[in-house]
Length: 111
Image (spheres, rainbow, N blue to C red):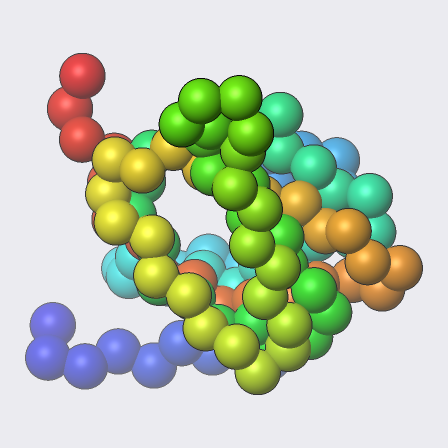
């Protein structure tokens, strides 16, 4: 495949792995459109790599602590981010409006 259109406006939202998560997934690519409702907080640590862009709202990323205190990063609409494969992290929406972001993910390292 040399190129592939991602028809997000015509795609239906699917339920994500969390009750406050929706997504639009194209099976042919690693790209996903995500929406996190206010109050979303993933309880699980992820080790996949991600590069993303926040379309609306505030996207919070918590990184696994190195010591006693976790590192927290908030990304606002218009900001992007990159997380290398293998870095433990989890996402949340600390805001009062939905967070929407475009994200490209890479698989977690083999255990």
